[in-house]
Image 1 (cartoon, rainbow, N blue to C red):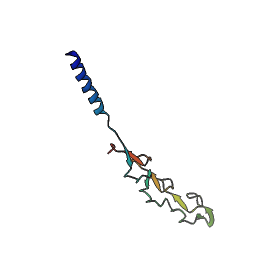
Image 2 (image 1 turned 90 degrees about the vertical axis):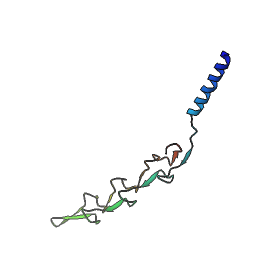
Image 3 (image 1 turned 120 degrees about the vertical axis):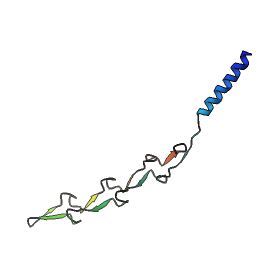
Image 4 (image 1 turned 180 degrees about the vertical axis):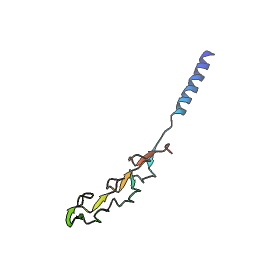
Length: 105
């Protein structure tokens, strides 16, 4: 009689343990399409813009003398502050992996 009870308890314990483990899979991240990054929302993928100080010339005039622009360092353009001139940012859904676990919904 005790053997039957122990056997049933063991079967229940095994079943409960099996239920606590779920098999997870990976799927392509729908946030970034699997690339791991998204277009920067600040610059919309166009990471450089004309310098407001020099108007894109790279030069400024002060007291009738021409100097290299100190803001853009003579390039005429500044990089987007959000993406640092990359045009894209790390996907916050998959954290750059490109895939997510199917139970991460």
